[in-house]
Image 1 (tube, rainbow, N blue to C red):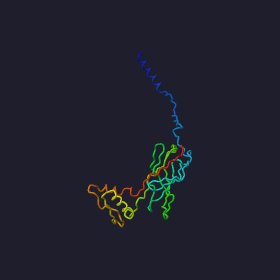
Image 2: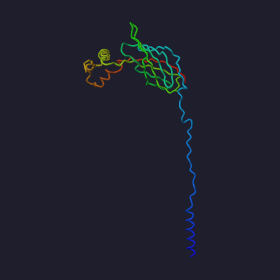
Image 3: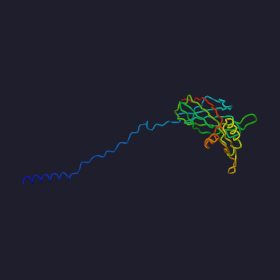
Image 4: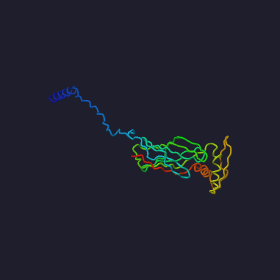
Length: 231
Protein backbone atom coordinates (compact mmCIF):
# COMPACT_ATOMS: atom_id res chain seq x y z
CA UNK A 1 0.00 0.00 0.00
CA UNK A 2 2.87 2.37 0.87
CA UNK A 3 4.63 1.60 -2.44
CA UNK A 4 1.43 2.42 -4.33
CA UNK A 5 1.12 5.78 -2.52
CA UNK A 6 4.75 6.65 -3.18
CA UNK A 7 4.37 5.75 -6.90
CA UNK A 8 1.21 7.87 -7.13
CA UNK A 9 2.98 10.83 -5.56
CA UNK A 10 5.91 10.54 -8.02
CA UNK A 11 3.57 10.41 -11.02
CA UNK A 12 1.75 13.51 -9.74
CA UNK A 13 5.01 15.41 -9.23
CA UNK A 14 6.25 14.58 -12.79
CA UNK A 15 2.92 15.57 -14.29
CA UNK A 16 2.97 18.95 -12.54
CA UNK A 17 6.58 19.56 -13.58
CA UNK A 18 5.87 18.65 -17.23
CA UNK A 19 2.97 21.11 -17.43
CA UNK A 20 5.25 24.05 -16.58
CA UNK A 21 6.55 26.21 -19.40
CA UNK A 22 10.12 25.61 -20.58
CA UNK A 23 12.56 28.39 -19.74
CA UNK A 24 12.95 30.81 -22.68
CA UNK A 25 16.30 30.95 -24.49
CA UNK A 26 17.19 34.44 -25.70
CA UNK A 27 17.72 34.64 -29.48
CA UNK A 28 21.31 35.38 -30.50
CA UNK A 29 21.74 37.31 -33.75
CA UNK A 30 25.01 36.53 -35.55
CA UNK A 31 27.33 39.51 -35.70
CA UNK A 32 27.99 40.95 -39.16
CA UNK A 33 31.47 39.95 -40.40
CA UNK A 34 34.09 42.65 -40.23
CA UNK A 35 35.80 43.16 -43.61
CA UNK A 36 39.30 44.55 -43.27
CA UNK A 37 40.03 47.66 -45.27
CA UNK A 38 42.88 45.87 -47.07
CA UNK A 39 40.41 43.41 -48.64
CA UNK A 40 38.87 46.11 -50.80
CA UNK A 41 42.06 48.00 -51.58
CA UNK A 42 42.48 48.89 -55.25
CA UNK A 43 45.12 50.60 -57.30
CA UNK A 44 43.97 54.13 -57.92
CA UNK A 45 44.93 54.78 -61.52
CA UNK A 46 44.37 58.50 -61.02
CA UNK A 47 47.31 58.52 -58.61
CA UNK A 48 49.60 57.74 -61.55
CA UNK A 49 49.75 60.93 -63.60
CA UNK A 50 50.90 61.07 -67.21
CA UNK A 51 54.66 60.88 -67.59
CA UNK A 52 56.38 62.12 -70.73
CA UNK A 53 59.63 60.45 -71.78
CA UNK A 54 62.52 62.88 -72.25
CA UNK A 55 63.43 61.43 -75.68
CA UNK A 56 62.06 63.47 -78.55
CA UNK A 57 62.58 62.85 -82.29
CA UNK A 58 65.09 60.03 -81.90
CA UNK A 59 66.01 58.32 -85.17
CA UNK A 60 67.24 54.77 -85.73
CA UNK A 61 68.46 53.36 -89.04
CA UNK A 62 68.27 49.64 -89.85
CA UNK A 63 67.95 47.74 -93.11
CA UNK A 64 68.25 50.99 -95.04
CA UNK A 65 65.09 52.45 -93.47
CA UNK A 66 64.71 55.11 -90.81
CA UNK A 67 62.26 54.86 -87.92
CA UNK A 68 61.68 57.88 -85.72
CA UNK A 69 60.32 57.91 -82.17
CA UNK A 70 58.64 61.30 -81.94
CA UNK A 71 57.39 60.97 -78.37
CA UNK A 72 56.48 58.41 -75.71
CA UNK A 73 54.39 58.76 -72.59
CA UNK A 74 52.74 56.80 -69.83
CA UNK A 75 49.11 57.30 -68.93
CA UNK A 76 47.42 55.08 -66.34
CA UNK A 77 47.64 51.47 -67.50
CA UNK A 78 49.18 52.14 -70.90
CA UNK A 79 52.38 53.29 -72.53
CA UNK A 80 51.94 55.21 -75.77
CA UNK A 81 54.47 55.95 -78.50
CA UNK A 82 54.19 58.01 -81.67
CA UNK A 83 56.41 56.41 -84.30
CA UNK A 84 57.09 57.57 -87.87
CA UNK A 85 58.94 55.68 -90.59
CA UNK A 86 59.91 55.89 -94.24
CA UNK A 87 57.94 53.69 -96.63
CA UNK A 88 59.77 51.20 -98.91
CA UNK A 89 57.21 51.63 -101.70
CA UNK A 90 53.60 52.59 -102.39
CA UNK A 91 52.12 49.53 -100.61
CA UNK A 92 50.10 49.82 -97.42
CA UNK A 93 52.99 49.58 -94.94
CA UNK A 94 52.49 49.45 -91.18
CA UNK A 95 54.35 48.39 -88.04
CA UNK A 96 54.27 44.61 -88.31
CA UNK A 97 55.97 43.48 -85.10
CA UNK A 98 57.00 45.37 -81.96
CA UNK A 99 57.39 44.90 -78.22
CA UNK A 100 57.88 46.98 -75.07
CA UNK A 101 60.38 45.85 -72.42
CA UNK A 102 60.56 46.88 -68.77
CA UNK A 103 61.88 45.26 -65.58
CA UNK A 104 62.60 41.92 -67.24
CA UNK A 105 59.12 41.82 -68.81
CA UNK A 106 58.27 42.03 -72.52
CA UNK A 107 54.85 43.04 -73.85
CA UNK A 108 54.35 42.06 -77.49
CA UNK A 109 50.62 42.76 -77.83
CA UNK A 110 49.78 46.31 -78.84
CA UNK A 111 47.12 48.41 -80.49
CA UNK A 112 47.91 50.66 -83.42
CA UNK A 113 46.28 53.78 -84.83
CA UNK A 114 47.45 55.60 -87.92
CA UNK A 115 48.18 59.26 -87.28
CA UNK A 116 49.21 60.46 -90.74
CA UNK A 117 50.65 59.38 -94.08
CA UNK A 118 52.58 61.20 -96.81
CA UNK A 119 53.04 59.99 -100.37
CA UNK A 120 56.50 59.82 -101.93
CA UNK A 121 57.63 63.00 -103.69
CA UNK A 122 60.45 62.67 -106.18
CA UNK A 123 63.47 61.16 -104.43
CA UNK A 124 61.82 61.51 -101.03
CA UNK A 125 60.18 58.27 -99.87
CA UNK A 126 56.70 58.24 -98.44
CA UNK A 127 56.23 58.53 -94.69
CA UNK A 128 53.70 57.21 -92.20
CA UNK A 129 53.15 57.87 -88.51
CA UNK A 130 51.40 55.49 -86.09
CA UNK A 131 50.49 55.60 -82.42
CA UNK A 132 51.26 52.40 -80.50
CA UNK A 133 49.74 51.50 -77.14
CA UNK A 134 50.98 48.77 -74.78
CA UNK A 135 49.20 47.71 -71.58
CA UNK A 136 51.38 47.77 -68.44
CA UNK A 137 50.43 47.60 -64.73
CA UNK A 138 50.00 51.15 -63.40
CA UNK A 139 52.58 50.52 -60.67
CA UNK A 140 55.22 49.05 -63.01
CA UNK A 141 58.74 50.44 -62.82
CA UNK A 142 59.42 52.00 -66.22
CA UNK A 143 62.55 53.89 -65.27
CA UNK A 144 64.62 51.72 -67.62
CA UNK A 145 62.47 50.51 -70.50
CA UNK A 146 62.80 50.10 -74.27
CA UNK A 147 60.56 50.12 -77.31
CA UNK A 148 61.64 47.79 -80.11
CA UNK A 149 60.16 47.97 -83.60
CA UNK A 150 61.11 44.58 -85.01
CA UNK A 151 59.68 44.86 -88.51
CA UNK A 152 57.53 46.83 -90.92
CA UNK A 153 55.05 45.00 -93.12
CA UNK A 154 52.73 45.46 -96.07
CA UNK A 155 50.44 42.42 -96.32
CA UNK A 156 49.44 41.86 -99.96
CA UNK A 157 45.87 42.74 -100.91
CA UNK A 158 43.74 40.87 -103.45
CA UNK A 159 45.66 40.44 -106.67
CA UNK A 160 48.84 42.07 -105.35
CA UNK A 161 50.77 38.81 -105.17
CA UNK A 162 50.62 38.67 -108.96
CA UNK A 163 51.02 42.38 -109.71
CA UNK A 164 53.69 43.25 -107.13
CA UNK A 165 55.19 40.32 -105.29
CA UNK A 166 55.55 37.35 -107.65
CA UNK A 167 58.61 38.69 -109.53
CA UNK A 168 60.36 39.49 -106.24
CA UNK A 169 59.51 36.11 -104.71
CA UNK A 170 60.61 34.20 -107.83
CA UNK A 171 63.89 36.10 -107.95
CA UNK A 172 64.57 35.33 -104.28
CA UNK A 173 63.82 31.63 -104.81
CA UNK A 174 66.12 31.47 -107.83
CA UNK A 175 68.95 33.18 -105.91
CA UNK A 176 68.62 30.64 -103.10
CA UNK A 177 68.59 27.72 -105.50
CA UNK A 178 65.07 26.67 -104.44
CA UNK A 179 63.47 24.90 -107.43
CA UNK A 180 60.00 26.35 -107.04
CA UNK A 181 58.34 28.03 -110.02
CA UNK A 182 55.39 30.37 -109.75
CA UNK A 183 52.59 31.35 -112.07
CA UNK A 184 49.42 33.40 -111.96
CA UNK A 185 45.97 32.32 -113.01
CA UNK A 186 42.48 33.72 -112.84
CA UNK A 187 40.24 32.31 -110.11
CA UNK A 188 36.80 33.80 -109.54
CA UNK A 189 37.65 36.91 -111.50
CA UNK A 190 40.89 37.61 -109.61
CA UNK A 191 44.48 36.83 -110.51
CA UNK A 192 45.91 34.37 -108.00
CA UNK A 193 49.55 33.37 -107.57
CA UNK A 194 50.04 29.61 -107.67
CA UNK A 195 52.90 27.14 -107.42
CA UNK A 196 53.56 25.69 -110.86
CA UNK A 197 56.41 23.37 -109.91
CA UNK A 198 58.40 22.21 -106.89
CA UNK A 199 61.06 19.58 -106.03
CA UNK A 200 59.79 16.00 -105.84
CA UNK A 201 60.77 15.64 -102.20
CA UNK A 202 58.93 18.79 -101.09
CA UNK A 203 55.36 18.62 -99.87
CA UNK A 204 52.73 21.11 -100.95
CA UNK A 205 52.61 22.50 -97.40
CA UNK A 206 56.37 23.07 -97.30
CA UNK A 207 56.26 24.86 -100.66
CA UNK A 208 53.35 27.05 -99.52
CA UNK A 209 55.22 28.03 -96.35
CA UNK A 210 58.25 29.11 -98.36
CA UNK A 211 56.36 31.03 -101.05
CA UNK A 212 53.83 32.78 -98.80
CA UNK A 213 56.25 33.60 -95.97
CA UNK A 214 55.88 37.13 -94.57
CA UNK A 215 59.58 37.72 -95.25
CA UNK A 216 58.59 38.80 -98.77
CA UNK A 217 56.45 41.69 -97.56
CA UNK A 218 58.30 42.76 -94.40
CA UNK A 219 61.34 44.91 -93.72
CA UNK A 220 63.34 43.70 -90.75
CA UNK A 221 64.89 45.94 -88.10
CA UNK A 222 65.26 46.06 -85.27
CA UNK A 223 64.87 49.70 -84.35
CA UNK A 224 65.43 50.04 -80.59
CA UNK A 225 64.56 53.11 -78.50
CA UNK A 226 65.50 53.30 -74.80
CA UNK A 227 62.71 54.99 -72.81
CA UNK A 228 62.52 56.23 -69.22
CA UNK A 229 59.01 56.80 -67.85
CA UNK A 230 59.69 56.80 -64.11
CA UNK A 231 58.82 54.42 -61.30
